[in-house]
Amino acid sequence: GTASSYSAALFPPRSWTTVLEHPQSLDAPPVPHGLDAVFAVAASGDGTVIYQWQHDGIDLSEDGRHIGTTTSALTITQVNAAYDDGAYRCRVTGGCGTVYSNEAQLKVVKPDFDDDGDVDNQDFGHLQACMTGLTVPVQDPACMGARLDSDSDIDQTDLAKFIDCVSGPDQPYDVTCLD
Image (cartoon, rainbow, N blue to C red):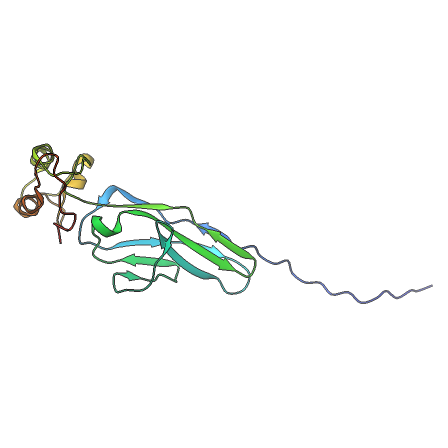
């Protein structure tokens, strides 16, 4: 004989929210002061995917310097070590949960090359050893962080910016000196 079953419905499985591509760190070499930095993430999930970029765990908002804070790509315009150094990640929310991207580090060029809190003769020695001259691009990876302006060389413009930042031994320097 024949028998009939109850009708059944088949629903496709829901898709967990997933980060497919994480943002890449911008720290080796550091980003020259005054240039833009861009982080990007790719994600998928059920329904509409919502993005929220964070800096050191704090949500960013559109403010003219941070563009795309709720999109898959974040642009930080005219980076400055005083404000922008740190860890960036994206919180991604979809219909099946919230996940975070891996943190990506942003390191911005600063005149305190030895990271001891002052700008002094030791920092000057590093700058002097890295000088390339006008329009001669830096080749040594150890010197990339000595580019204090937004071009590819280390010349008199970088030296002038450095001099504006000199504080002396054991004296904190003004972190906005490159502005």
